[in-house]
Image (cartoon, rainbow, N blue to C red; front, side, top):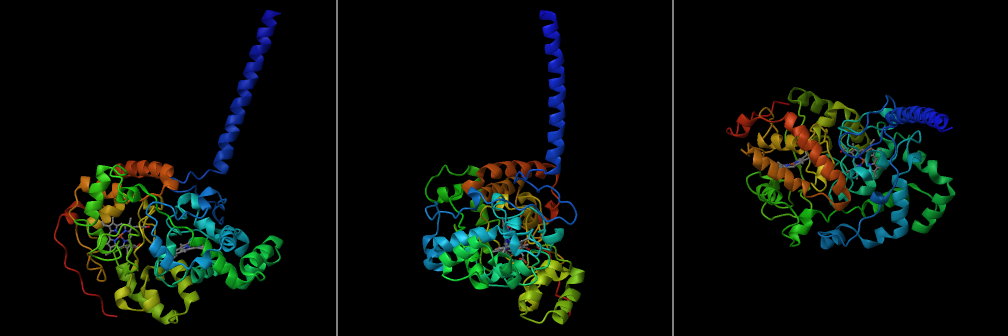
Length: 444
Ligand code: HEC
Ligand code: HEC
């Protein structure tokens, strides 16, 4: 009895183990098929022709509070009129932000590329839209976009309402045939009919749809970082390294020349200047002049839809602000981005060409752009030592809002590990050398 019982038990245990192993293998295979996005580092690769998965709304998609430490009350009141933030409008905008029916084939929403779990970015060098089409530019965060005087890397529009209309019809983003088409995708939906009526007192329509999306975005103010607590008086909120980094940021590293609202006043709020600069990112010198000529030939000045398509889907994208102004001095100039949450919004720059904040620092340290005739005059070799570079990175990391602390810590560790084996931009000789003579712009 006992023996046979034990035997049965063993057989049972063996088959149980086999079953567990099988289910384990199945889970691994299944997990590979739909790999989870951890929010740290690059997201899982996509099958060809597939758009990225649509993120679900969750707590990170909720409007942020005005009680955050560091929240700029005066600036915010100046940037938005309270009436635009009626709760019914914000709630409608939040729903629209996740609405794939606004895209040509019902697969892509704003949140596809502005994922709240990734601080409203997508973690890809260049964004991927409908049918898996890869664009030319890196998705900036929508957090604090409410404070920018212009939208997009080249500032081709001024308001969030104007901005929201463009991705909906861009053929590489949401690919709707027209805004009208996007509106008809939701116009028959009873819930939307009720929500539009509550928010605006009328039926589903284009203008209110864009206003609602913009209203939602105006609630996405992101502060309350360790740095904000430090500025508010908590001396222990950031590390000594981050404190040295903040000092360097405003002195030897020269960052405040562009990442501050004025050159001579410490800016602890947005870390941008609402301006455009050529800092030598991705500039294809030999192609730039012909591309600029192509833009002048093919794009009627001021035709917004054509500029939008060129910026996202063509090589003319590298022309940056020039696409908008046609001024030679704006060739390959891009908008200075704010630096809040920058630790978790990589990869970096308008083309997503740099993987880590150490790469970013190496770029600035060598004052990149010897062969770039349009390089901003404020770019020059910085002679920052390795410990100084680490300090500036520690300061940048201290700008992470509390919602992203956990992935921020993991991302910091990931970037640090990567920087130990890969420093593609490092050029110590140039960083410590003299400022090279800048070539004259080629004749046009
Ligand atoms: C396919 C990916 C994709 C989709 C979908 C998308 N965006 Fe973007 N978004 C981007 C990229 C890339 C940029 C930068 C493009 C440029 O500067 O030329 C951008 C720029 C922006 C900006 C400007 C931010 C700044 O700092 O200049 C805002 C705001 C924004 N998007 C909101 C939205 C909204 C609202 C929607 C939905 C209506 C949306 N996006 C849909 C990828 C996307
Ligand atoms: C001459 C103006 C200028 C100076 C000086 C400058 N920046 Fe920038 N910064 C920019 C512009 C413009 C961009 C976007 C450029 C692009 O993508 O082509 C940028 C982009 C960045 C980014 C990438 C952000 C993102 O979302 O991709 C980081 C990080 C950054 N700067 C940090 C710094 C630090 C740190 C310093 C000082 C060492 C510094 N910057 C000095 C103008 C400047």
